[in-house]
Length: 548
Image (tube, rainbow, N blue to C red; front, side, top):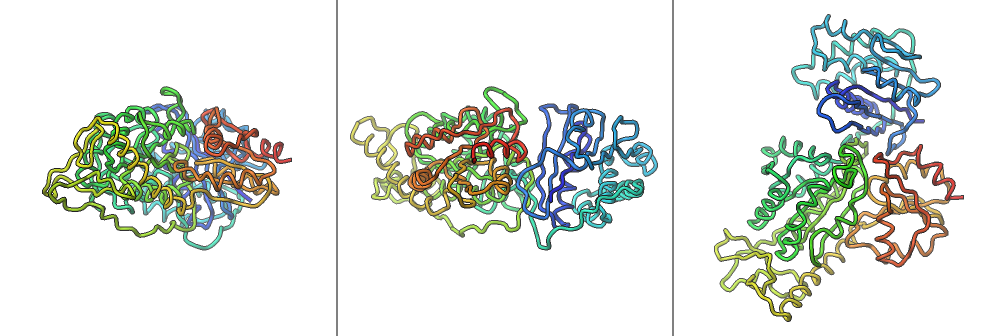
């Protein structure tokens, strides 16, 4: 059985922090928790809400029907009261017009304990803990880890809220024993880059990638890295490429609009073969679109960004744990093969919290592909495997990198024979990279059945939750879009009785990639493109009609 809590209010009411605190508390109580964050593109004001769904069993997406609504303003009631279950309850401010509600005079409590308004949400967390049949120890434990100078006030506020509730209790018990992790996708990206030994992260703030910039900035001294904010995305990617040329493991982060500005320099990466990793966190487009909401509309863009032919890795994690693992892999591949690695994710993964049992184990690899150059050094040497020796300027000899076509030394050329040889060299190493990536679980299969659901990225959570109510169905999640696991996918699709494509975009972009790479045309498509992510409640009836 699963439960859901909606916390709603205005920007500045502490909605997101209250939801994260609740999610961590429930995780400590042994539950699996998924926390979805929803907010408009406003600095202050507007309606903000979080949906926290939890269960004793793994849960990978949020639910639309809710057991509890914590309403910090009247608008929360207006927008969400219809989602309340028949036996649900509303915890709200005194004076808010709401049926089935427990009203709390938070202003009076704050005045009595002399606390600022930002503490208000802690009062309602205290009420909620009593409603769920728990004491305040697990909540106070989370407060002690997070709230610094406001620790005492948060504890006092939650205690006052706890004492306010009389009689109404819905005991949820405890979950399962064992240590669990509660992370967002952006935190997974950040921790994966640290684990890979990142030297420099450069970005210009752009939702929904910005939290990585903030997270790594806080950790840069501890982990001996440099985190920089530049004046725009063009400066970001050029600075990162320059840093990589000097030997630094460099990574940049952005969303669709910033990624578009980076296109020319990403093409330069292709010919200069200077390692670079890019985190592309998708949001609703085209144009500015719906900038604080989610979509999967940039897949073909990532596969084709930059003019000309050059190899690039495109890896698509499906949750926070995979974000950690795949980021480390992307940086490793960029450095080893002197490639462009693109980690493609979206707002839904990046800003949602996931619970998982174990941090994925990473293969320990020490990349030392920078050597001291000798006289007549060939930085683009035409080797049998395409892996030319890499060096950096400070090693002593003159080392060249150029956006022009070049010979083995890096000197500009225009003759057709050497142009062909250099193109062949770049794609020769791609074959070796592709062979290694095919051993990195380029696709994952969940379940068994003759009907195959196929997708990528953030749709994973809702699909996994939906599959529990379907029979004779398996789910194929594609993790590496480039290089594409064509042989494995062809075999699966040809042996399937029915294939259903599920994506969070208008045209079914993965379906087009599958058709291009395998010749298999998927007829059955479930596409969502209203700027909101998939949920089990939305997806299940659509899949049931197709699975019959």
